[in-house]
Image (tube, rainbow, N blue to C red; front, side):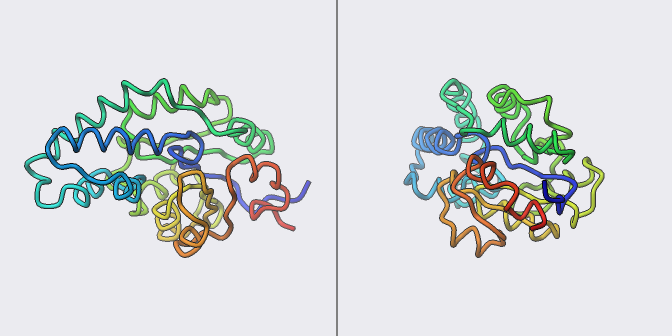
Length: 223
């Protein structure tokens, strides 16, 4: 087995480990329609994964102050109602357990609200492999700001050069880069490889299953 380059691996959850991005898109689309500010689904998708305040600012514009709280509450209601549709991506658990068994610290680095995080945690069912995690309660400003990555590093007790971030969105790669952390992108959030690379990804895989199958040859390990 090759030597690892890093001591910790930070994982985004939504769209990376759990197939949840399009459920978020659907929930936001319904919420925004109901508050009288419909937004095309593709525009919603482009904002998924960033700080919720920034997302609403982009989607609601001048109507943010008037409609923001209502839209956010309705999104949460729809998301929780449909949470039974959530599934983890193929071999997500196997990847996390393999990394933990090899002595790396596995950190779930998310700014999801606590209630959403608990839903995702239940879907993953891999607490035995998780060393640390973050939620919205830990993170003042979510991606693309570096806060979530910096807090995850602090919880893991590692320096930026000792960690790698795995995420599905340009926001993940931008946040990692700002924190001085290398990033690997996966395409399962619906973002293309060129955009992920432009945002700072040092490698891009189709999904976490491909990363697991090519783990020893990946940037996680020294060739």
